[in-house]
Amino acid sequence: MTTILIKDSLRTAIEAASGGAQTVLYTPKGQPTFVNIIPKANIETLNPALGITGVHPAFKSADKEISQLYIGTYQGSIVNGELLSLPNVDPNARNATLNAAISAAKAIGSTWHVMTNAEFSLLQAIAISKGFNSHGQNTIAGFNATGEHGRRLDGKAPGEAGNRYIYTGSGPVSFRHDGNFSGISDIVGNLWERTPGARVVPGGEIQIYGKGNEAAAAGADIFSTSDISAGWYAFDAATGALTPVTFTGSIAGGDYVPTTVNSVRVKASATGLAANEFFFGSWASVTVQPTSTLPAAVKSAMELHGLWPTITGAGIMRGSETAQYTPTATSAVHPVRAVAGMFQFGFVGGPLTVVSEQGVRPVYYAPLS
Image (cartoon, rainbow, N blue to C red; front, side, top):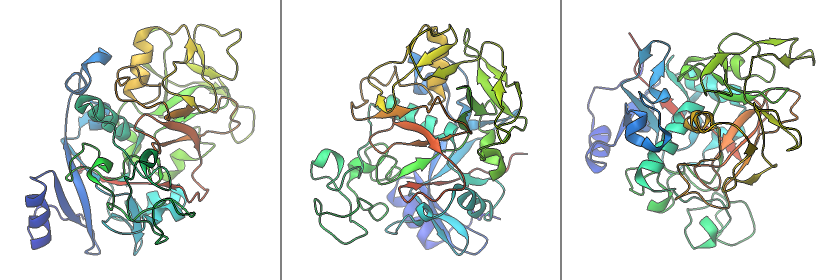
């Protein structure tokens, strides 16, 4: 069980220094993990320009609501078999598969998990509400080589040949999600963040798991490259509503065909697009909108879930932020996010591959009654 309420000197110090924005939780093995407290919020409060109302999906799970999320202040490290958020360490979960990272999170408790697609989209909405797209260690020297940098794992000075990875939380205040030292660190840069809960499947259909944050409670098998279990939804191309997916065949068998009526799908060419289809170039800048005739309501619904190049965040997005949908995927591909900025994403991830530039972040919520 995760210990939350018992005060100790470390927890008291962190809460006082952060003005209550952060706290420390303890795992069953007694290990501390540092988190930011994000209270439940409505979509229209964070991003009214979307024209969508209600509780943000990150705070919904089936018919229940999550009162607050405890999002790891730092990118994840696996210590003694548990996925932790710790300052001034190597975010070594980058050396693990997604499956292993999920297992290390669940080892702490059933509602511990790696940050999901819904939760990252929440942080995008917060970025828009604050008008701040955080910087990060996305080059050897730091953001756009401006001299902003953290302390490198390889011990080298900014600009020297080597890798860009830094000790967690060692960057400047601009590396925090809200521009304050009490903010979430390195949400942009250092590592791509794996954010399971969305995927592109063969045939180009865009899918999310559940209508809210159900991905947080899901086991690692849901995010395999071939999962065809119930719980995946597609976007209706006329309204943006979420519809349970239908299909024939199987991904593992190589004959998967999406049959969800009028679902949004990405295509590899802009030629001959149907009304439910769109095209976006490979790793094209998110400052350019996809080619499509999809109505605004559909684009807003997808942007809410972080799955459409941002329209409402145009004032803070960067030309260096890109997106990749992988429309020719022959298996399910999952998102990684945010090396260049909050609105960068790519459907390229798989759960069984170790990619040293891809990490995860632990998140917790109190069990729902």
